[in-house]
Amino acid sequence: MATAIHPTAIIQPGAQLGENVSIGPCSVIGENVSIGDGTKIAAHVVVDGHTTIGANNQIFSFTAIGGEPQSVSYKGEPTETRIGDNNVFRENITVNRGTVDDEGITSIGSNNLFMAYVHVAHDCRLGSSLLFSNNASLAGHVRVEDYVVLAGYTLVHQFVRIGEHSFCGVNTYCTLDIPPYMLVAGNKAITHGINVRGMRRRGIDKDALLELKRAYKTIYRSGHTMVHAIAELEAKGSQVPQVANLLEFIKSSKRGVIR
Image (cartoon, rainbow, N blue to C red; front, side, top):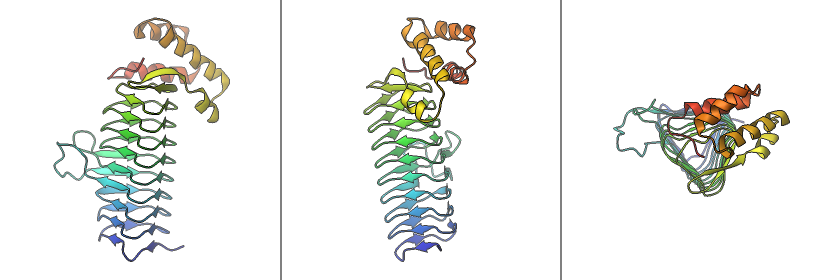
């Protein structure tokens, strides 16, 4: 299948299109955009700025990628948006490019599903195998690790980190970092255990799940301070890498983690 561009689409000079790319009616592709092989862009999509999109992505109607950041500090600098492969962007999604206040890059990994009306603000760094349900929104500078699920209407404050394999329930409001493997919900978000179901689906073994449950109880249900809980878990010396990852995430948090 050859690259197919609808006659009403606007492809600015300088844009780079791979093989087997399709671009639908009335879509606009900017001059500094690169689109990888097999990517399909529906009608009425705008891809602008210095934006690189990988292979085999699907971008549905009324989505805007690489637009100017919603930041009062932005002065037109040539910042970037980088997107990997095999992502699905449903209708009415916005992904803003980075700012020089950070590293100048908004990045998204591969194999992600973003449902309608998701917003990814400037300077966010997203991993792979994510699922963002309708109207989930990230403020600027958010970091999201792999295998995270955000249910509908989740709101994430700027500079928050979300650890791998965590799950945010519907209408969750996150102002502090979410450690990996956690199940959280609420306004403001609190923990409700570890994300057992999600991790089982991804093949994490029962021994690791058991150790994570024990670590969760020590951190969140023992009544210890966070410092005391971490010291106790480190003294036990769990051989499960997930527990070590959990503790390292908490210790490296600059905003503090949800309790």
